[in-house]
Length: 168
Image 1 (cartoon, rainbow, N blue to C red):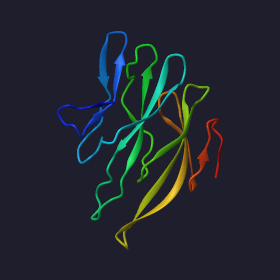
Image 2: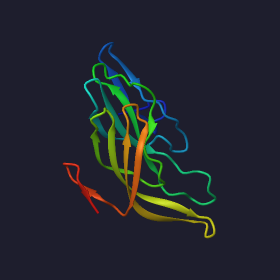
Image 3: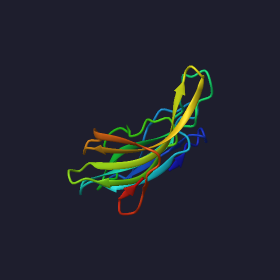
Image 4: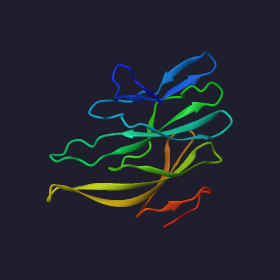
């Protein structure tokens, strides 16, 4: 993780390409605090040729007449296991209004992955002009190209352990 020397508030994730000795930076839009507070969550090998890098950063909620809640979404990019090069653009994994936190991620047999995460999600109550929060846990499955295959949402915060089982 690097900090852009031109604007010290913007952080970037650099991926080093071992084949030619260069560093490529994963690009995302910035401005209005977007792209700040970067955290690397996991790097999971999907098969012998590629891995998925999961990270999150601040992604402000906009378009409301009142101050919106803090929002930190999860993103992913495929990484070549041999060169370390990014194999495409980032994909947004989560989009709930809250600070999304990864509980568990695992590779699937077909080269994709599953992710289990928690968020204290917010919904805007227009009649009351305020946000209301509620906890939820989300399980998603992605294929080898980062396409969403399935998604399930449950109430409250589910807890996971190191072997991947969870309970509510």
